[in-house]
Length: 81
Image 1 (cartoon, helix red, strand yellow):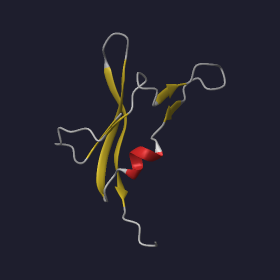
Image 2: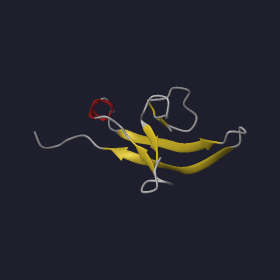
Image 3: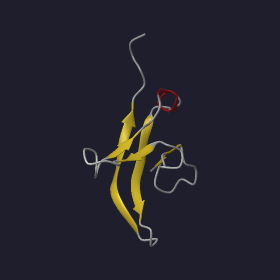
Image 4: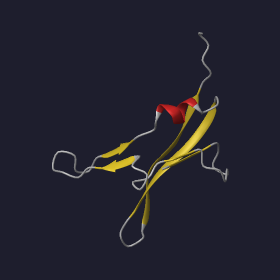
């Protein structure tokens, strides 16, 4: 999963993969078919107020890429101090 400031941006702001342990795939009967995404508090603390875009793709063993989800989210500045 990649988070970017916009779809044309070359820079990835946050990257989640199974290799960096930020994506976990269900591995037993109780969790089969589940995908868990983990973004740390440190990652979100570094986000400046803006609208960000993301997508999550799965690559099969044969190299076929399927997009599972895509969207955007808003980070707002804190008002109360």
